Image (cartoon, rainbow, N blue to C red; front, side):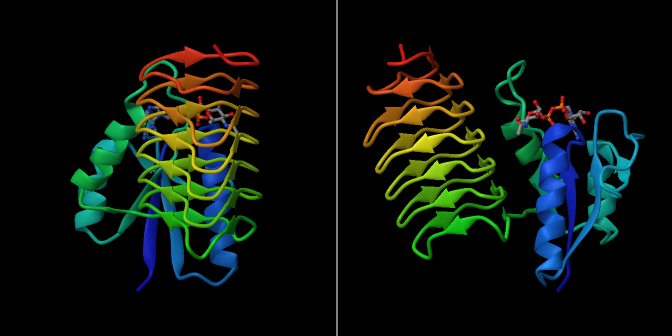
Length: 214
Ligand code: JB3
């Protein structure tokens, strides 16, 4: 059955999510990108995909069968760290299923587990026995090595590297190009700044930066 997918959000992150879904469709998956929602409900098309309203329209569109699945396509959460989690719950409350989108040019080991609603962008690598939660962003060229465990609503930004056995708790953000050495734990909602090198555990809610990160 065709999955009719809506992206929740229509900004910079949505461009990459939409391109990923278009690549998946070109590779032969039975998916249709029905549109995106944003705060205005009246934005210009993105890569040819129309804005179909605001999030308030989702229950009606789901009930009419025009949509079956969703992806949270808002990436930036600096002003509101729970936004992606809230939008995930809103999509489900509208009666839609979260869709996991793996770009055909991502490498995902057969023994890795990818949660619902998670996106794995082009050039990312997810190694054996990694377990990735729900509504996670594994952004462009990020590397998740063997046995990592990643919670829900996490963002691993472009080019970030997690060595083997790293644990990221729910809602973490690992910034662009950051490195986390093996077997460390990054606590719930913590932020690792872009370019940081993390060599010890990071407490829940903390923000660390620099090399070594503190
Ligand atoms: O660096 C990279 C590769 N990507 C960045 C990404 C992680 O974060 C990107 O360059 C941007 O810095 C940022 O992308 P994002 O999150 O799409 O931000 P922005 O381009 O500012 O667009 C935000 C979009 O979210 C706009 O279309 C808003 O209308 C929409 N939005 C905000 N709140 C919402 C809501 N859309 C819906 N449907 N519902 C909301 O509650």
